[in-house]
Image (cartoon, rainbow, N blue to C red):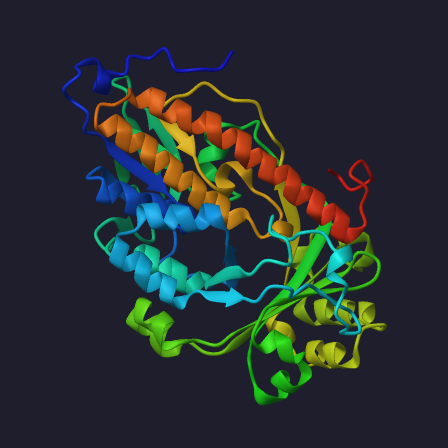
Length: 416
């Protein structure tokens, strides 16, 4: 039965020595949240991120912060920084459910909950770019950008050495995989942990918000993101981001100066609905636009006109994947958070909250080890025991939400 590694836990054996070094691979939301918490706890931490700079990554749109995400940020960020971030959050009023493809309000009574929250309740949203900027605040000497992790090795003295493509290396007492769904750490550490296709493919684009575009969108979308439900398992998500002074105050100078009002658009449908090959990424933007417009024949004319106005060069395609739950493994000084272990579909909007919850839980356990309240391996084991249960439960619920939205039976022919 998996449990604690039989290897000698030298950091705890002497009783009086509890200082250790943590290396985090990946500077996404979960990795940065963990680094914030560890740094404030006085634990040595370094983050290695493949992005070339803090503004290198297009961060997408808004995420809904549920109680897990909110508590994690409150627990890991300094109070002043959390309060500054809280100023940028926007509350989506209660009762705003999805729209139909002809832009009628859908009866909320007949609709399921989204993100674990009934439509009758208000929800809090934060911009991804702003959140990441807040999580980078104060970590200038902690995050090493342009660091492409290749592999790790374990040494006889219980050290873990992370290797990078430029030949550099980093020694750690604890290695944390926070490097997303395609985690290289996971591939080496848990090669049997797999992600599989769900049968759903998303085509999307992020475009500038012009006056012409604004006139084509439903009025409520200009203030609040909306899911638009179509026939045959088709779903469109449209959201508008207009920057605010509170958000700009948290961003690096270059990001704040170039921030613009944008529309994020995503269209999902079962793979069988698309005229694409085995490798969707090889499909041109022009073909992606043609494919979507062909599926929008019965949709509202304004939505078709909106897609017509999108520059095909902005379009991209992504098959939706989901993790396959695995049994607990033997605890060592390597562990994982977020999408690196429990990658889930976006149909409950819960992936970021789970990554933040992981970061907060692992931070508390590592802090307890640093204070001598529990052995280091026990701290990691306690984290993994709890994380595996709630993390893969979220994976299952997210997959069920996708299947319901797409009209796919849980045991149907959908590669799941």
